Length: 90
Image 1 (cartoon, rainbow, N blue to C red):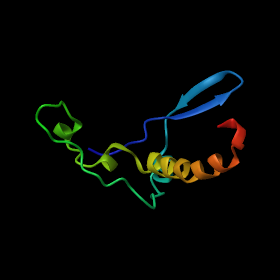
Image 2 (tube, rainbow, N blue to C red):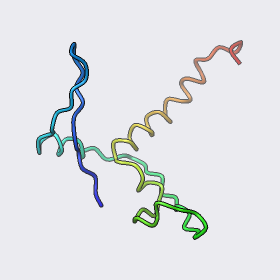
Image 3 (tube, one colour):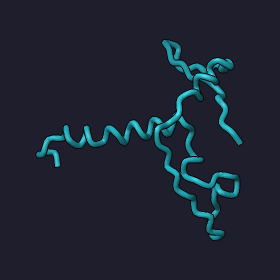
Image 4 (tube, rainbow, N blue to C red):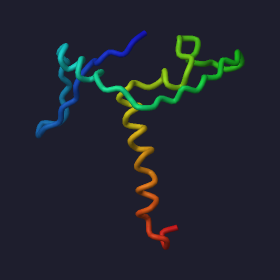
């Protein structure tokens, strides 16, 4: 299996609309690559129903590159947020 861009969501005065992507949109959506991916194995214990039955073997297989980039960005900002919280907020 592979990733595929199914639609682009646009918002305007009339609300949300879903637009079919072009080949150029799809190429742009998959051009960025994350600096780090969570390369940890997923459990393959037969007791559990698992996504590993469908091919993924690592946690990183569950996320698109764009999702991984977003998660990495959020993780990098956590220390900034904690630093900006005043002591009395704890």
